[in-house]
Amino acid sequence: MTNPTPDVRPERPYFSSGPCAKPPGWAASDLATDSLGRSHRSKIGKARLKRCIDLMRANLRLPDTHRIGIVPGSDTGAYEMAMWTMLGARPVTAMAWESFGEGWVTDAVKQLRIDPAVIRADYGALPDLAQVDWSNDVLFTWNGTTSGVRVPDGEWIDADRQGLSFADATSAVFAYDIPWDKIDVATFSWQKVLGGEGAHGVLILGPRAVERLESHTPAWPLPKVFRLTSKGKLIEGIFSGETINTPSMLAVEDAIAALEWVEGIGGLDGAIARSDANAAALDAIVEARPYLGHLAADPASRSKTSVCLTVEGADEARIKKMAALLEEQGVAFDIAGYRDAPPGLRIWCGATVDTADIEALGPWLDWAYEETKA
Image (cartoon, rainbow, N blue to C red; front, side, top):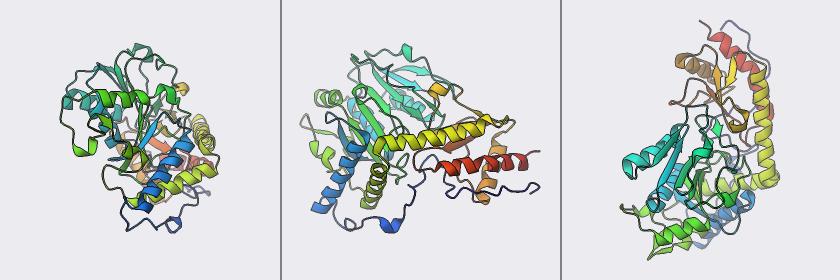
């Protein structure tokens, strides 16, 4: 090492975009454990699952018209459950501007074989949202975790749409005020803005999605873990804590703790404010450094959670070396960009990160950049 290291270190150097940093003050010893070792169908198991659902509803300000279910397979499982159970009734438009959106395109084209209209944009850009035909069902990602690109708002979603809106919102919930009247299906996982554990997904259904489920029979087989209806009616128990398969009650308790933390910082408004402050701090770092840039050039569609940065003159090998040096110093973990994205850094700015740690990161990025010069 040829350059002196900065004096100030991030206290919590957890900048991974998933699983993300735990809430400040989190400790495993603080988690409630009475539900562990018990059936999830026991009185206490059902009560804790319902507590988790109720906290999600309250903190997201979700209207009573929308149902919340805890499902297997993280955000991917929840989104594919929605696709497999509801698509096929209408034409489909699939939108992709990063790898997870491309995954939904692949599912629609190669697995379900429904020949969707596909609207794409390169990493860092958002497609023309005016192209969307809302007589179709529309698949999209609210906040692209691997590209740092998001939709600016819900104004582009037709209030009088005939098709359903399917929002992969995994790195958007608790960071944006989502207009739920525009969303028929939304999915996320606890491991993003809440800093919870992986493996479990959350499926949110509006009334039009429920109507689709009860009126449409898919042309393809449905695995047991995807089945949301019985005898043509929604299985309501799934949306009150009677999960399709056995959940980890430890992960549920961890989610409850995160949701109680959100409640304690002012709910959704408090979580949004923390994400906004973190994103602003990182933006100030970028603005002050000529070698850094935003992959998402347009601030109106730039993520406030999964922020993707370009590094002047850095190829994949140099990015990996920068990330490895920062990890060795214990000042930034897991900040190399996603494997399918252009070479760069990806820094999580969600609510569980402290702004002071983002601010402390700037000089360390300078150090790593200098250390990896040829």
